[in-house]
Image (tube, rainbow, N blue to C red; front, side):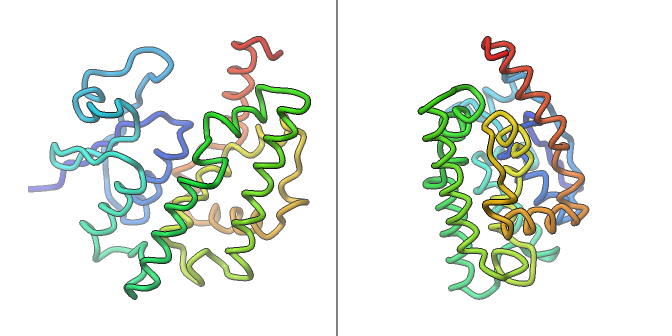
Length: 226
């Protein structure tokens, strides 16, 4: 019996993009179901994620897996014969999990995705300046961890790259509305992001920055920022 894989998602969500990349890396076919998070959440979403009631949710043969990093690890374990994302070495695997977890808990553009980054395009003056500093500090920290490596884990695209690169799709909006230049401040990070985008699994899983920018611009209009 073939695996039945369904992804409940919202197209601009970087968390959902993580799962899309992982599935693409493994060559897994799946059914994509778009959720209307700005309107009504579907009964299926509420059934499959009754605790948090949010996307993304990976459904494998009728069983839900919630939280993006958990879902990516699940995909890597279930389809472990295809393009492994986590290293085979236990220590390196632990390090990859540490940095992905660090991004989710400590890096402003992830943990405060609806706060720090939101303030880049919804505030002005001192509040926005504080958000800009937090954002750039986060990028510089990640750039330091990346160093001169091609990818966060070394020469091979892997788990931490999957965890981080989706946020790059939002950078055009952050740069224009937040008046920042990420490539000038963190050239190695941007070079890494562009290298990731050369991979088909990434480029086909992430929306164009222009589309996300238009989404942000529309949201700004809706809250009276234009």
